[in-house]
Figure (tube, rainbow, N blue to C red):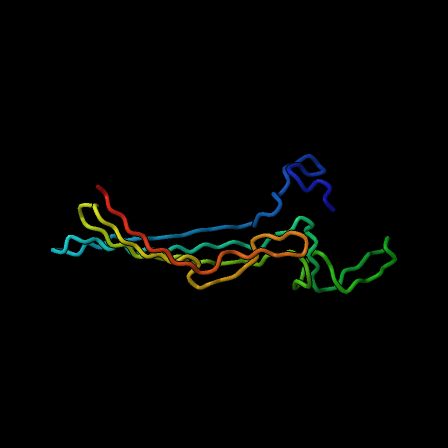
Length: 152
């Protein structure tokens, strides 16, 4: 099953990279909001990232529901599960994931002081990032960061 699963296909073309999602997308925005007379600038920010599902394990042997036929060469035998399509029964297939990060920063208009609070994986979405043998490794849980910066 690992034949031609690297950089080059058996036909000599470029292979699809292993252990990578087919689609990834990220969008983010921030806005500076100046508070008149206070000398302060507030900057709220947010980002949204998407990753499609992919095989996270080295075996790439996820089994799905749905019948598969061995065809005429296989005696027409039918098997109750297949390695190609349906719902996941077992294996290292990591599902699609959407993550949201957000934060707000407050800084002086002269740029000498900044204080910010940020949230990563704000909705505490868990998904499989990688796997080895029978162990699956999840992404980091929701986390918070508080930053204080002083420019001299």
